[in-house]
Length: 368
Image (cartoon, rainbow, N blue to C red; front, side, top):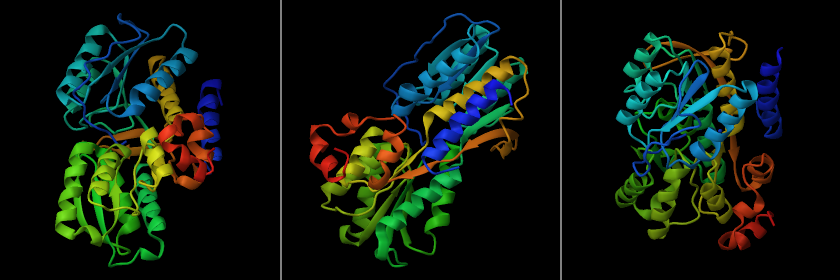
């Protein structure tokens, strides 16, 4: 095993062991313009990093710096050219073209719309550029895919909802299910896993897409309350923390409290809601191992090395391409294991979570 592979394997295994495992949603955002990069010049050792939006906290706070640091550690004279689509699929397509013009040799992309980006990816590949799908399996002729086991994410979410319901998890218990954006292939996998956990055990009485937007999710849950009645909703499945924020506000406004609400991404606000009791769970997908793995594969592709020892499985994209893949394993987070997951991994400190507003709840949760 070479040093590069050892770093990725050890890093991933460490997270896996620490979390007792083997956890994007996404969100649209048009507030932020294209971010520019670590390098304004292209060249034979330039890697492009294209992330989908700037409203999902993880991308620019964690994924980008972790990715850049790993590239730098593996290839001192490599450069990273960065851009953010700000929730705009057309803009991301333009960014791919811009990367090609700048002379990047490898593009790592988390697609805003996996189908819409296909022609741009194929055009880049036709010019000899290698493309790595990051976190979401983009369509087209991509060379590799790095993500988490997304069906497992949904299974964890569904099981966490059942666990939180306890004895109230019956076939008569009405559940509201708010899924992600159908343009994101991960959303279908989260949904599939959640249904595998929930079907036959509870009554999914209302199911809609929240488009990964807190405002849309809030509107959908408001409609569900009108349709089902506030007293008849036993729990809410939310595919990510961003939507869960809007849902929690809507539930509070309707006088609904104490029911399970799921999430995903282990966003700080989601962790704080778990501490406060307005959200029951999230799914933690450790960002560093994912970013490190993607950076390692990108550098190997840049240097003409084989990636078969890293991408050990295969996933089939919406366009039918069979893509060498590296899939990491997510973990469910509840109030009981916040210390052993996001705090232990250094994602957040106790002081990050336990601000004045949450001090009393943190003390009750044993965090202070």
